[in-house]
Picture 1 (cartoon, rainbow, N blue to C red):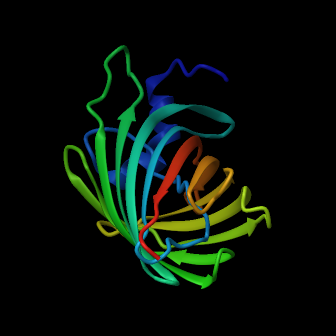
Picture 2: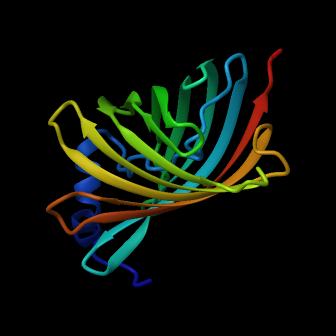
Picture 3: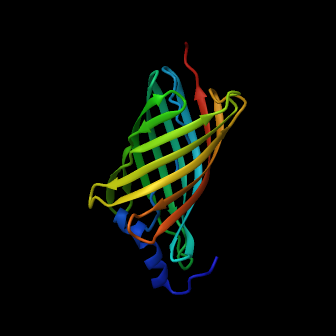
Length: 219
């Protein structure tokens, strides 16, 4: 990766993402999911922890921007619907040895199953807080291939981040996998992601790892 010696060049590269947040810290919006198209069974509670890193760039240049730590809790409401709460701490990269203070993100996300375990739609509504606030909705479509062994699945995700302040929109794509002895109970979920600003040359790339555990209720 080529090092950017000119600070103005770095600003130009990441500005398409940073300006969307209108925050004191410059961070890339969240793109990670750490989930499949399956919904939580009624009465079950799902807990997720995750870590991911983001780099952004343009014109062939890229640089590390921020890393995130995520905690999420969800509960099954019906056979085809669940509800999840997410908190993510976004930690900006060091700039000249001065680490940024970071940004907080919260959302609430109902999730609806169109085809159980294969196709689902989620509608997170949340906000970024850090030297200001920026509200966003992120409609997301998840398509999953669940292996019949129930030990592996692969998920493609597509979402659009729409920021309420200026209606700026970003498109995100993710590819994730789930590994477990029983996906109904727990899963390790590695994931990569790619986000773009339509009409601009800027982009971001992310990779991360999530751990999901399901506390099963009385059936």
